[in-house]
Amino acid sequence: MQWIEIMGGRPLQGTIRPAAAKNSVLPLLAATLLCDGPCRLTDVPRLRDVDTSLALLHAVGGRAWRCGKDIQTRPVITLNGEIPPELAGAMRGSVFYLAPLLYRVGRVSMPLPGGCHLGPRPVDIHLAGLAAMGAQVEEQKDRILLRRSGSLHAADFTLRLPSVGATLTLMMAACLAAGTTVLRGVACEPEIEDTAMFLNACGGCITGAGTPVLIIRGQQQLWGASHTALPDRIAAATYAAGAAVAGGTVCIQHCRPAHFESFWQMLRNAGCEVEVQRDAVTVTRDPAKGLRGGMELYTAAYPELATDTAPLAAAVLLGAHGPSVIRDGLFQNRFACADGFARMGADVVRKGRALGIAGDARLHGAEVEAPDLRGGAALVVAALAADGKVRVRDEGHIRRGYAHLAADFDALGADCRETWAK
Ligand code: EPU
Image (cartoon, rainbow, N blue to C red):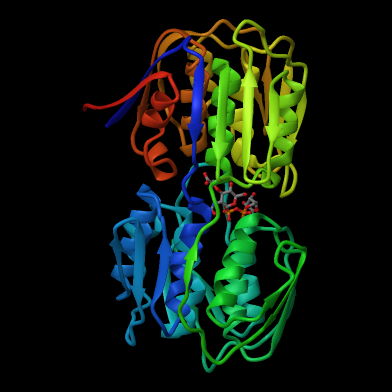
């Protein structure tokens, strides 16, 4: 069991560079199975979800290994389509293997994917899109079976909502399907554009990434490519939220500030100074001055405020002056971290998908539990302002998305460390 211990009350100062985005690396790793040539993903962080994805790739017969900071893959002729339950259940990213294995093996058996318990996370859009391309889909009680006879074919398919995962699944499938596929109502998140760039570098023909309509001309074959995934915008937001909560100045370098304009706006409205450059952002909050609350925030699909930043925004607003409310438009259980906030002395109320925050909280030391990845990070961020020691108990959620969150904040001047105990 991992614990993160934080003695709050120290302002942050310094520069930090976010790692490559987990939510790009996971589809990229799966997409390497589509390729008939070697691939290299550079500067891949040592995250638990990346390790799980590598284990899954090995379990189906793929070849991939870490080479210093990179991951190198080699094409394999014979793969199997049986995804082991413990790997499927360990992360949502297991769903990215559906399309590549269906293409390679012709038959996939996948137990339902796991991931953070954010509420129901169906895969109906992935399956409906694959069926429109000619896959036979069988949903059993606890697993999905996919088959194809012959190649998949192009389709004109409208997603019933802009699911990030389903957009990635269908984009991967369409790259090697016969004909030109049109996908409408797709997600526009930067991770889609990043994966499309990789697939195009491998010989794919995808246009429209970053817009609601993707046009994909199916190819006979994809070769390999070398690719650096885009910087993690949620990790960048986590460091920025830390600066807002603790006070001080943090410069986040080599990030893409344009990818999270709504989060910067929230910090500015709260009274932080946010200086945006082309590939860096500096967040300053005078420790002698308080933050302003009184906000009503909504999360929605990109480019709106990202659902993954909702718990971080909440951590910023706990001690801000005036009541705020955050509604999550994507997941029913985004605010499981509310219990931890309350244990630290915050006055918060969960109502359906919304979190009400009374504001003006004086947080104190407590022992809390990370309920999920972003909720766990938000507890660490909130603790930076607590008077006394906060211990965040984590059974591994935080490490799924941050390689060394405690060390990152410690390097920025917080008193923050990771310990291991039963
Ligand atoms: N949905 C369906 N049917 C589907 C697919 C999605 O109803 O077939 C619903 C979901 O239940 C949810 C909404 O659509 O209510 C959005 O889900 P989406 O498919 O967009 O999310 P995802 O692909 O499951 C990814 C990230 C999440 C991030 C969301 C939204 C990965 C591995 N996960 O999930 O990241 O919150 O997009 O941006 O890429 C995280 O990193 O902690 C995390 C949860």
